[in-house]
Image (cartoon, rainbow, N blue to C red; front, side):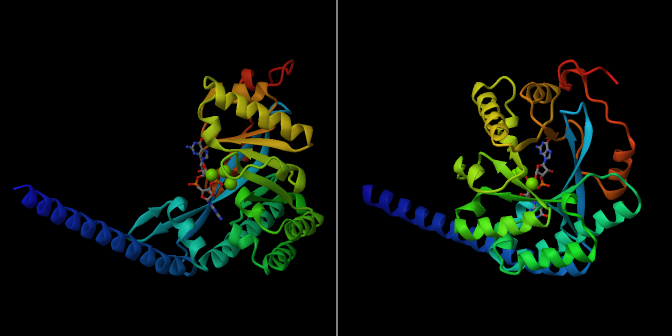
Length: 300
Ligand code: C2E
Ligand code: MG
Ligand code: MG
Ligand code: MG
């Protein structure tokens, strides 16, 4: 009887394993299909950029530009989030073409807005580690920027800590060359990766972006509050400005304003916008709630 129970359990285990591996296979097939579809998407107009506003707090509320975020609308599968397809693209060579498309689109938008005299401040573009480390990246950036007459301060590059573990000297040289063209660098998702504080000293960042996972718990979660405070004061002491992402609530913005965070970005002010909506956004006067205004700043 004990033996038959044992055999039953074994059979169930094997079945389970079989189920597990067929699930894995399905996932793999889905992934491969998605990669093929993504290749098509670039050619067939399924991709767009949306633009999420950044708001400057220190000056009492100014438009501080936009972060460009990629959107994929597949004709049958519908909207596919970047969290699903970017990692896949990163594991294949697709991210290079995809990244190029994004950069080109952003440069075009910059040229369009400038020609129309629309004061957009700047556009920040996410650059995947694979794309950034591609030997062609710098010259392609230069070519694109030149083609569209992009001025340095109009374009900011968001990279994550995972890039910085590579050959430090080579990266420093690359970043310096890019900065010489006037472009700005933001360290994205700060605090979630390897987070060696030395990175802030070793690489020429203009901005640090506090990851939304630390903003979420503000202001009541003591550890999140401490982390945000520490990032802001540390960055400032090195002359680096701070952008908080994922700000959804007034109290979060208030806390960040009290800590002299430079810019905030998040659903509290706006979700990512279409080009047309972004233009409307720029046409609307920004009025910061009183609790987000620097002390002594009069109401406008
Ligand atoms: P990220 O660069 O950290 O971008 C911020 C993400 O937070 C965006 O998600 C944005 O829509 C979302 N977000 C903004 N405000 C709020 C808020 O108040 N609450 C919450 N819950 N979320 C907020 P999205 O657009 O889904 O992008 C996810 C990630 O995908 C990005 O994180 C970035 O790492 C990557 N990504 C997006 N577009 C591109 C791209 O063009 N190139 C590359 N390489 N990566 C991209
Ligand atoms: Mg980003
Ligand atoms: Mg981020
Ligand atoms: Mg993120």
